[in-house]
Length: 192
Image (spheres, rainbow, N blue to C red):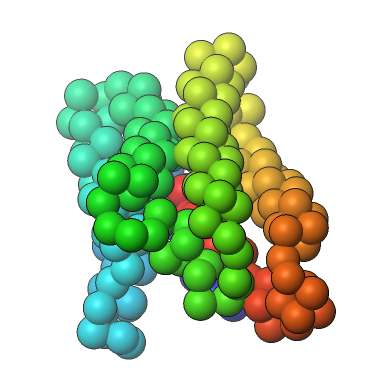
């Protein structure tokens, strides 16, 4: 259920585009969906995650520019900017604090050696950077309708494949007692 909630704005954008075939109407819907999602999170928990705030703010800025200037490129670039900001956050975490970002996220669930955490952090940096590049490649080399479908299915599929690959890689790095405990196999997730 949480996954559906996290992807609610993207799903609303996709469904609106499928019905209207209008990028600007779909952009208006994703802006409203992000505002509703953020309000609901605040109402239920009295806080909003930093990831949701970052993504939501960028939807408002890039979606607003898309509607104001009437140029779909802004909403298409938003996906890449979000991924690159996440990559930058993972990279910056190497220089601030005693733990890299992936260790802060997953550390309570896994006991790994420092070099494994550093490698995993770099893997996430590469993944988010690549997603941003792939998004722009699709946006500029395929039809608008294809990009809209890729935004939902392609990004979700690539993220799922990455998480599965990461799980296999991590299972080879875990100490025997962690590898046997299924409750310690949670992967961090990212809505677009």
